[in-house]
Image 1: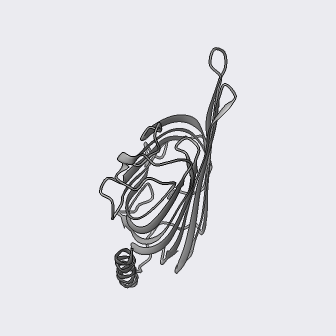
Image 2: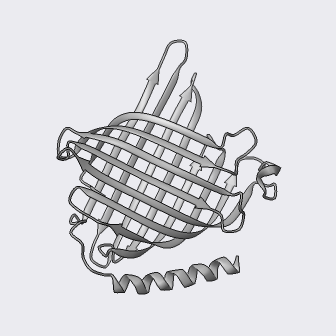
Amino acid sequence: MKKCRTLQSSVIFALLFCSAAFAQLTDIDTLRWQYRLSATGSLLTGNVERVLLIGGGELAHVQKTLGFKTSNTHQYGTIRKKQTESDLISRNFLYLFPKAKLYPYLMAWLEKNLRKKIAFRHQLGFGASYTLAPSSTHRMKASLTLSRESTDFAGKISPNASLDSGETITTCRATLRFIGRHGLLENKLGIAYEVWYQPSLQERKNHRHHLDGALQWPVSKTIALQAAANHTYESVVLPGVKKSDLLISFGLALGNSRT
């Protein structure tokens, strides 16, 4: 763990130095307050009763030297009136020089997941994002984060997980992240995606990835119809829990944010 903390300290020092060198304003992020809300879900009755509701919200405040962003998603579901989902992910970032092409940040990630029997998970760390060829209709970013993670499971970890059996695991992670948002057909069609890969720096078999994708058809300046897909994979799970999940949903998106 000492080696992990030393590596984190060295990286954040380098990132702060680089951000000062690249601290030039880009032609994007012109809105100081940005928000995005989304709601999707489904209802099935008859031979099988199924309710699934997914709500998401993002809020960001951007200034020349500082900025923050909070992104929160909650998923609720039942099958035959038995609760199957009550899942919450909260990702929070504090940025330094957020209008620079390369800028550092602090990250706090909180999560609970009924489906995967995760009672509580938190990650604290820091990293940097690099903006790739920004324009009025296209936005892409790549980032690298180093973090310390602790996960409390609601049960015993499988012995074949290459970790000591128990209810809690802690590890240092590197997170590689790529996000993109594009306006096509004169902004009549929007495409958004986000990809994460999170390997453990200490356990080779402990890794996970996450993919979000969405198509949006604007009906006004702030409202759009949305079709979304979400895929997650975790290599370390409890016995009886599948390692991967795929969810496809349809609904509405509301917001003024392009990033």
